[in-house]
Amino acid sequence: DDKVPAVRLAAADALSKFTAPRARPPLRKILVAHKDMTLRLQVAALLVAGAVPADIEAFNKALDSPDSQLRAAAVQGLNANPDPSAVPPLVRALSDKLASIRLAAASSLAQKNTEPAHAAMMAALTTHPDNAVRFQAAQHFGQFPNPNASDALAAALKSDSDTLRLRALQSLGAINDPKSSQVLVTLLNDPDSSIRQTAATYLAQRNHIVAREALLAALANHPDNAVRLQAAVYCRSVPAPLLIDPLTAALKIHHEATRMTVVQALGAIHDQRATQALATALTDEDASIRLAAAIYVAQRNEQTAHAAMFEALKSNPDEAVRLQAATHFVQMPNAAALPGLMVVLNDPSHAVRVAAVQALGRIGGEPVVDGLRTALADTNPTVKEAAIQALRQNNHPRSKVVLKEAGIQ
Image (cartoon, rainbow, N blue to C red; front, side):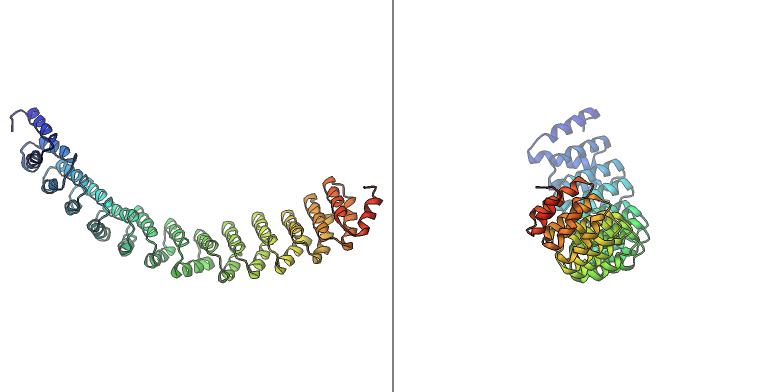
């Protein structure tokens, strides 16, 4: 109580350095009632260090001060105190007339993983008039996902604040349960494209029935290609035969990224109906999609794949697809492919001709000898070398005759 302010401040600072319990009550008394506001602010800062539960009531009373700086300091003191009893005063500060103090209190509560904090944040999210406070409440449930918060987050999604809506959506995405999924489904038709796309992205990561049904419906007819893309991503992540029909239909979507993802999803489903769908993608208008479909089909040892590769070998205008088709028969020799392999011995691509020769060599026997004889006369040395190797490996006597006629040992 010295008349000199500097002495009063020094005395308060000295008291704060004592560890004895009886040193702290005088500081609390100063915080609540001293006539020197500068001293009260100094004491508030001193009490933040080494905060103890007994300080909370003093900070709570300081929230009633007409001085906004002291109220802000009280919030800082409450924030530094981990005791659960600090929550009610912070909740009270959410109603402060100053926006910065409301925000500081909300930011503090948002970091507390306690039931009282959850309840306070849920109430704020639902009814608080300050969107900045509601934003912190939404962020709280992103950090501490709580299924009970789904309704409150859904309420926040009706806000006129885009940032609050997006934050509420992100927190819903962290709550992985059927109820939050149902809320996400409603957002697939939100007027805001970023909300629609984010909701679809979260749904694509879930395996709830409500998510699957909504995404399959979106894949079929949603007007937003970004949403349809996420629906295709979902199908790719959970490959199953029941998805073949909707994926086949989606190959007609006029969006390359979605069609590519659909091809990848079909490629993960080992079923002849999926192979048939992939075969239709061999003539897609996009070269990368044609190639992806060809790679998947080329890896399958089934009749549907053989037939698709045979047709591609004979007539597909895409060199990369024909190369995959020829490679398919190198890996999976099939005498039924002979007519197609004979045709591509005249292919303009020497890489395709090489693969065709290798495939003939794998099939072997007399039927391939005439084709290999033709390849011996190829102007490309790589094709010719492949034909020589195939003839040498062929056990039929005519192969040796052809090599001898060509003057090759």
